[in-house]
Length: 502
Image (cartoon, rainbow, N blue to C red; front, side):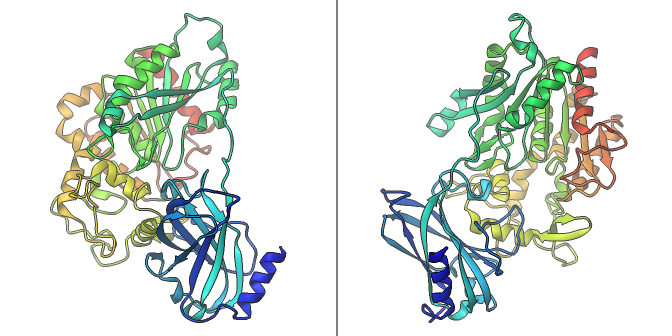
């Protein structure tokens, strides 16, 4: 506390004043005796109330952020950081005079865009400065003196297991071993009869999630399965995390054959290892948000493999409305503006608009070059560019959409895929599609669901979709009149009923 107080006094007194705000960032030997490299982020937030850490949330907020790449910063060495080169919402010198707090973070594995501050990141104490004029503040010194620890250690139990599998096809694609992972929740009866086989529910998390949902939900699932209120089956929490973001288990020219690896390698391995019934009728798939899109994609791309999908609040399933953008060929849509010129909203809450596409995209561009939500879409949907990376759907400065990239994205438009192949797919999907979304989805995802479900219902599947009035992306699973015991319980009941009748 003494060190912080001295820093505040010195800076408030103008000891470092002179010129636009800059930073000198050094590495404390206590956190790394070896030189470190990665993406250096500096956060700036206004206010007098002391906080322990600074960072950005999923959507743009009041925290300013700037980034630079650093190579081989040695202990005791200093890195001069310029918060004007790459910053959001603007270069720091353009902020109004006031009371500010600062924190530096080194992201060695470039994962901040998808995971925020996580294990292994190095960071400084938060330094507060009273009465600062960023346009004439001089240099603030920050020291990387702390290492981010793992939030929690997850260990296997009798009923919750970690499964890992080195995929031959993905390893061949990347030229290095690629491990597929999952957390499995086993019924209490699993250990009793060694010959008994079980159906499986394959559950896919949304952006930012991982397989560790198995440990958070597992104890309750085991208890409910033992009590008979939930179906006795193995819950497989698949991990869709990758360095490029959420790979959604779709084969991609940039990410590799994740769908092939899942259906031809990983799931057969799990079936052999954990006595899962190797039958279509016993393979259910479900997920929320990006996991909702993944589950729907898997059911449609592999209709003979899965026996039903329960997809909730899926990422855009009809590219006539990609959260407000019309990506169909010939569209003159801009990613940042509606067709009548207004800012295109991306996030809302309780009727209030809280972030535009432009704000979200520009903040993500500072957080990291890859791994964020928008870059994640491009790693799945886009063609590969001349530099070996996926081509951007739109210019991040102007919002202008690249028509060539938008055309390539059409192969991942679920509605287009269904429409083009309905004669073959329709009979295989009857009774297997279950899509639920809130009418006020936080990311406007109900717009694409309405378009897709209009097509599905016109084909005679009038019970495939449900629009839940008044619900958004975050509260969809809470009790509602059509699922008084919660959406998760209703999905389980429907899986049980479908398994019995097949």
